[in-house]
Amino acid sequence: MRLLLVEDDLILKDGLERAFTKSGYAVDVIADGDSANKLLAYQEYDVIVLDLGLPKLNGFEVLKRLRARGNTTPVLILTALEDTQNRVKGLDSGADDYLTKPFELAELEARVRALIRRGVSGGSAKIHFGDLSFDTTNRQCFFKEVVLSLSPREVALLELLMLKAAKVVSKTKILEHMCNWDEALSENAIEVNVSRLRKKLNVFGIEIRTIRGLGYLLARLETTA
Image (cartoon, rainbow, N blue to C red; front, top):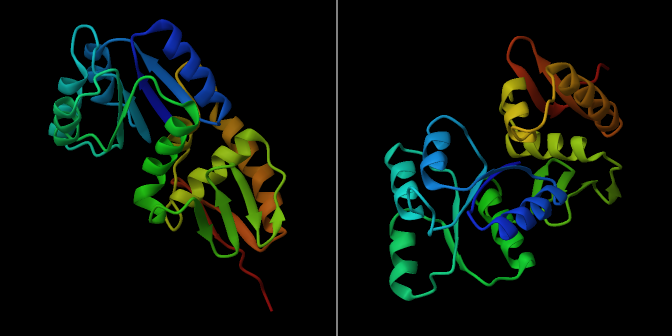
């Protein structure tokens, strides 16, 4: 999943970038509101963590412009402004959650996970595709009670395919959601990761189906009598 962190505190943003990357997110970091607003006009994210006290354009304005464009990406406000008035203003401006500084990293990560899965799994910590389940908290995949041994790239790929189950996911979308702008991952690399993950899923009767010219689709493996 791809996350945008908008934070101008150098120490905090570096620490959060490392923490979210370690948790399996592709993380982009922006330090001012104007740059964030311009980026969000064309780049899609799975979740946005947004400070309010930003230079050039404050977080309230970034959020208002985002929602005015019809963008429904989940937004968590992370700010030192803890009074009720600013909390209400943030939520009324379109934020999905509001967390004040100082905070516990575990709580922040839990809130981010909850926002991502809210629209796709009814708020459950697990995503299901038949007997296949993905635990978003521990980032582990199970087939019934069997834990699948997956690389970090395979975990990220399977999570995306399960979140978009029954929909075709293009290579471009996979690249957008699995890589930040500092990473160079080619379409050939995507094909390699798809091939490796496909072999592991086929054992359990699940396939990653190639829809020529469009992308990939998670499906039950078709068998012949």
